Length: 77
Image (cartoon, rainbow, N blue to C red; front, side, top):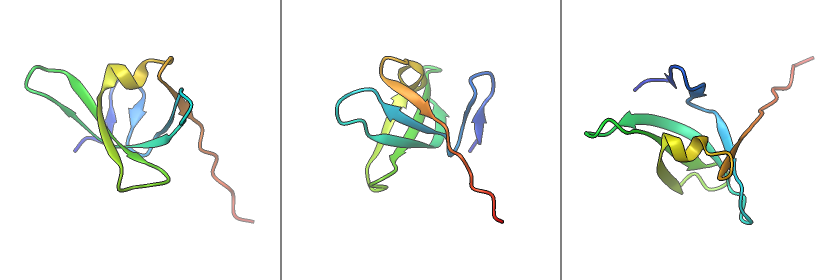
């Protein structure tokens, strides 16, 4: 499985938040391209990893539906 989609800035582990009232947060789990050459992204719910969805990449990139989340790593002291 690829770890990123070249040219789209998407990578496994990247997180997104829905832009609706429920505002679930999702993490990119994997990618695939279907038989019609449509790129898809498989996402897992951060709070409930048993919940998964598959979307066309274009749906995830639609900023009226999702926004990328910045993950800040703590430095160990």
